[in-house]
Every structure is written in structure tokens, then in C-alpha cells.
Amino acid sequence: MQEQPLLDYIERYIDLTDSEKKILLSKVSSRKYLKGQYIVQQGDICKHSSYLISGCTKTSYLDKKGQEHIIMFAIEDWWTSDIGSFVTQTPADYNIQCIEDTEVIQFFYDNQEELLQDIPKLERLFRKMLEKALVASQKRIVRNFSLTAKERYLKFSELYPIMEQRVPQYMIASYLGITKEFLSRIKRQLANT
Image 1 (cartoon, rainbow, N blue to C red):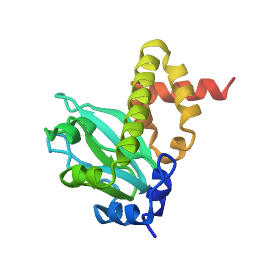
Image 2 (cartoon, rainbow, N blue to C red):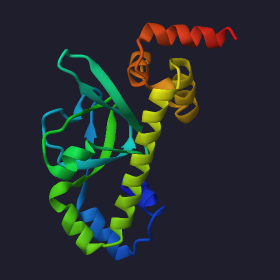
Image 3 (spheres, rainbow, N blue to C red):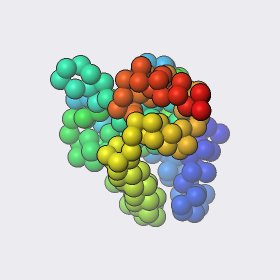
Image 4 (tube, helix red, strand yellow):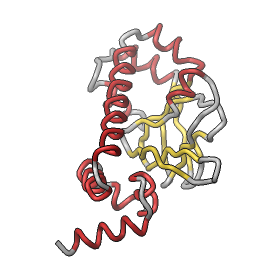
């Protein structure tokens, strides 16, 4: 069953009865995206929150000069969404684009309240998810202010070792706030030590 990874994820936080699982699965849908496709585009309203079954995505902001700034990546067993747009149903600040062919299970804004009424304990799940996202975001902000580019790269490699093989170097450089040439220089220095 393609929804099993989602159920396994949820059951790390809450226990669902069989009838609750059935209700939950009736209110979500699965979708496949091809590499390069957008799940959400900047300026559109984010209608869903997506749990990744397979694949890899990047969340980025395109500034007025056309420069892309990568905010985060997501891989299997992670969630992706423009949370601000999803919660407020206002235009998205971010693009979410597939770096690989990606399969997701989506929770839609239109039926989330109904789902929370039917299964109140899902409130705990979503609260825990938001708490984790907030903590990760705050830690990233502190790292960006307090660490050198080399230290940020080493921390990225430590926290997300699988990303090195799945994400192009220029995207990692954007995530770190440096140029791809500077990232190459850092990697050469580390290889020679």
C-alpha cells in the first residue's frame, strides 16, 4: 500500500484506529510529479501540504533580479509546503520544485478542518510537525548568522549526508548562501586536509 509510509510516520506521534486510518486515507490523495515539475509556484495559493513517499524537492524564493535562493530540500519521509500560503490561503512566497521524479501524499486545505474534526488527535500530529519545522528554521537562521561558509557546509553535510549524492552542487551552494565556485574551493580545501 503506497500510503503505508504516511501511516508509519503518523504513528510515530499518535495511534490511529483502523476506522480513523480509513477516514484519513479517504481525505488525502497521492500524486506523482516528474523531475522539474512544480508542486507549488510562487504567487499561486498553496492548496496542499505534501508528504514525500519518494523523490526530492527544493523550496526556493525567486527574487526580483531572477536570482534563486534555496530555502530547504525535502526527501522521503519529509513534508513540503509553503506553510504561510497554506495556512492563510494567500499567494505563495516560495516555489516547490521536484529535483527528482517525486511521489507525494497530499493533505488539502479544503478538507483539513473536516479531517481534524473527524480525528481530533491529528491536531497533535500537526502541532508536532510545526514545532519541528520552526526549530529547524530557527537553527538554520542562527547557523547562517554565526558560522563561516565552511562551517555551514560541514554542518549541512553532517545533518543531511544523503543530499550530497542527490542534489546538484549549485543548489547546495544556493542553500548555503555561497557561489558554486566557493563551494568547490571549500570542498578542495577539505579534501587536502
